[in-house]
Image 1 (tube, rainbow, N blue to C red):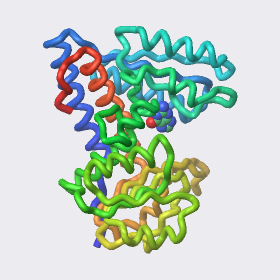
Image 2: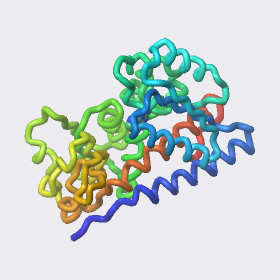
Image 3: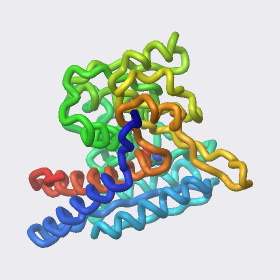
Length: 294
Ligand code: GUN
């Protein structure tokens, strides 16, 4: 048996098209153009690629995109001053500060300076706390994407055993909360967990989000399980170029899982699509409009 490959590229394209339709509708009916501001500090090459992609896809969805690039040695005051201006700017409905920030900047303080209503990354303690309390909140984009991909396979996650490997604020922790909202039974594993292969073998749904290439082996997977691979590491390949590798040994897992996301072409595409969803939702909420249909 071979697992079904979950086509994140296609699912993300469909989601972006639905966002674009809703953006056109709020523009037509309410004269509202959702706007996303992305702040990039320094010149980390991977971050530059992400930010360029966010900019292009935001514009393609019909939204306004504002890019702010600051030097790596910018002061904390200057960065927080920019966030304050974006908080007050009525054309901006979403603010994203690309992470990781260069050394010397206080990430927690920077995130706390973002207006929670514009926090489309869902990282502000208000949003993280609301999500943990089961209240409506802006939720981090990658976990939202993971849930959408899972639901492309399973209509309902109720009662399923889910294992989340990784406990970061950006992925693992919020993913646990979203899975609980879907009534899954959730286990969260991390670097100190004992017998990870055994935990994995019990799971109907496996989410690998640790950034360790091919850590999850094929014989850890329960036959027929759904595997969502959030990891993305660039490794040198035999031809002298580089290749992207997930946290799951893909070829091994393919023979055992019921469904699996590839890397690239799985979760990665969903993150930016969900960022557009969050920006549209934030714009409607700030304007006092009902939530959009995506
Ligand atoms: N760096 C890698 N992924 C993300 C993300 O989802 N949001 C932000 N702000 N930075 C990131």
